[in-house]
Image (cartoon, rainbow, N blue to C red):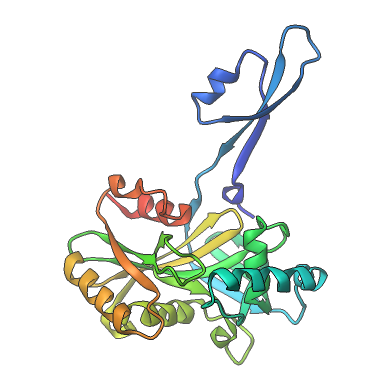
Length: 279
C-alpha cells in the first residue's frame, strides 16, 4: 500500500518551535502540558496532497463478503439516510461497490470490493470514513481539449456532491461487473462519462491511466484526448446535461492553468490530477 495514501502528518512540536512548523504547512490542533517548566507542547498536523501514479493494469474482483460497517450500523445508517433525504429528496438508495482492500505495486492495482447500499456509503462518507479498512473507489474521465485544457464538472444541487468540482465519473455499481465477477473499471468510466456528458467511446482517444490516492478516496482516472477545443466541448456538455433526465452537471469548468485550481470546491484528487497533467 503506497505511502501516498497517508493524508496527514501529526507531530508534537517543541514548545518554542511552533512557528517553524507553521511556516512549513503545519497547523496547531491543541496543546498538552510540557514536562519541562515554561511552556506547553503544541500538537500539530499537516494535510498531505493526494498522490498520483501511472497504472499499467487493473485487477479488481467482487467478494461475497458483506461490509461489516454496514451490518454493525444498519439502524443508524437508515436514520441518517432518511434525514439526508429530507434535505435532498433526489437521493436514491441504490447498490454500490465498496473497496475493501487493495495493493498497488509496479503499476498494477489489485483490489477486492463488496456490494453495499448507497445509504451505507453516504453515512460512511458523512461520518468521516470511520471504517479505515474501506475505501471509496471510483472512476474518473479526464477530458483534454485540443487547446490543452482540462474540463471538470460542477455538480448540480440535487446530487450527493452538490457544488463540488471534479472530472466526470461516479461510484461503481453491480452493472460494472463482468460475468466472471471482475470489476470493469474502464467500462464504468465510459458509462459514467456518457451519462453525464453524452460523449461516447468512439469520440475519444484514450491516453494515460492514472490512480489518485486521496485518503479514503481512490480515483482510477482515464485521460482522454477529445479533439475538440475547450469552449465548444464545454458548450456541448452543458447542453447535453440540461436536456438529460438526471441533469447531473450544473456547469463545466475549464482548467487551463494552476491558477484555475485555487477554487476550494475542486476536490483534492481532481486538483492533484490536474497538477500532474498541466504543463
